[in-house]
Image (tube, rainbow, N blue to C red; front, side, top):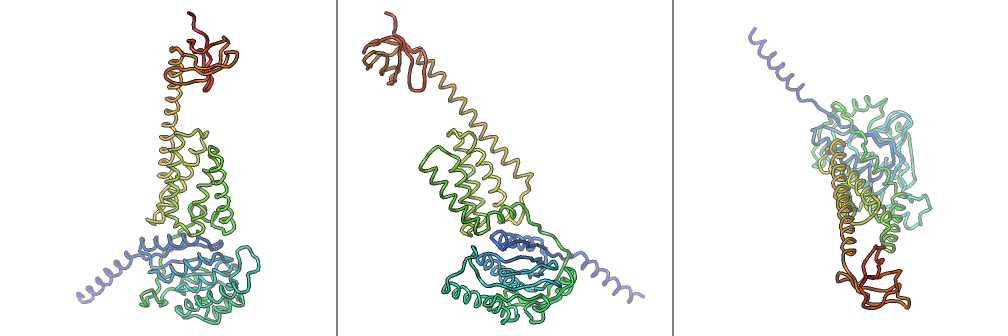
Length: 426
């Protein structure tokens, strides 16, 4: 009896231990063109998976294609990943075209649900215009050699990877599975994940591991992703860049307009992020510094609140961009909004007090002028206009009395840089 009890106890203990070590899979969804927003989205998803010690990343894909530069960055990240990527073309009727087809080849396990298709990865101009023949050949040959290396690493069909680039070939997911361009043909997501689990895949260190699929933890597109998606479209990013330069030129040639400088400054940072010239985190830092600069300028420059509003917008977006990339943790709006509003309140409060002080000083200065006596230093022919010395300063004056040089006058009012005066009685 004792001999039976011990093994059973050990099995129970081991079973308890396994149940406590729950597995997880981070799930993301790509339903738009591949842009800088997609690159940032997948990078954050991978960091979330590593932080939560998840065993895999599940990517739902339905995309017409997108930026080749963004695609290259995504492929580089997948090939260097410590967590296997499981990529599925879904839902039924969806497709992975162009850049999406290339990314699928980099995934550790890929597949498509029934009635989806993949392919058509020939590089084209972002504007849809015909590409010069020499440039077209160069881009096609470069893309083919790059994709062949990725396909070889994943042990998939080389002919397919070449044809989708050189001939813009596109096939159904069923045909792609038959030609070993895709690994799995699935009925739905659950079927794909079930078939993917247990497969051996090659990681960066060339050590094969078994795919583990755990509880799905959704990493849904957030505000940061939505903002990046809006600005990252290649044509819009180009227009934003040129428009920002134009606005900054207007501000430099017509100082004091303020609005063109504020909009142009923020737009320039956005376009640099969209062009991959600034990492999202560095772009967030630039926006925060720009926002603080605008708020400081609001204290000293009469902008009717334009600098202040631009500063608050820049601070908010910069905060959204900054923290998530470096920490993998989405800073809650319950923290961002109060901080931004508190900073705005401080700067607007200081600006109000500064303006009040300036007005008080202006009233005090006017009173000092009225309490002082001035001496006429020059006049016109009638003696009703001219210049005078008062409190060690030279002022223009107008007077109903006809004045002569050397006469003493008293100030009755001030209009800008001109004083209204009258002749002192002897």
